[in-house]
Length: 273
Image 1: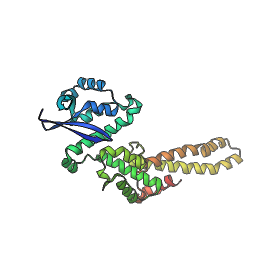
Image 2: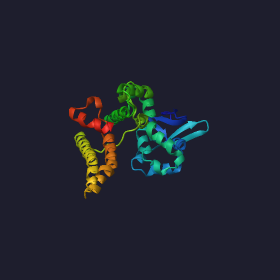
Image 3: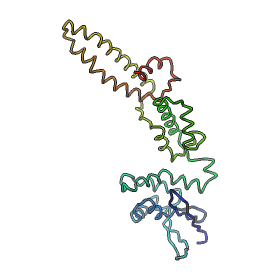
């Protein structure tokens, strides 16, 4: 009993009850469920059924003015496992946003509280893969808005109060991508594949243009190919325009100031048409 110390941590105007038992921090689960809006009894049964969570669950007794209080607790190391085991699509719509907030930020708050020195030395920041997505989102914003890269990064650092984009907390990644304007899904094609598709578009559009020039002459001589050439000249224009949008989107990560000679021949055609 004397080895147990109760403290509270503020999290989004709510309190998390933390019990330090034998020098190890545990989270009282019932208050967490009530803060989110989850049914406590259903979650208690879920913890008991889970083959991993049940091994970490621990009943801790703490004296209070009203007598001995008992809390079913999980160690901090298991909180994310419990949180991310709850499917947001299966909870009531009115608590979905709160649950997602807990899933994104709760562990960071606890980590920084209990291990500030470790958190400072090894912050829970975005992964190398997420850093690449931030770079892509910045490139796409530059292309969309005409802003300079340095200006976008400067605004980004001010918005999230960080010295470098690599220092962005992992819990802020989705918010950061949204702030930048999003990242269009990449097709998985290499830049060489995209280069070939860009050239295919350029060739096809040039052919369509010349067909459009020839079509009136075929019509004048009442050629049997007039209908086909008319279709290729005008109906294909819409199809090519849609294809250009796809290629434009998928090549948005390519920075125009760093283009190779070959890209210089084709990418301006895609972006300026």
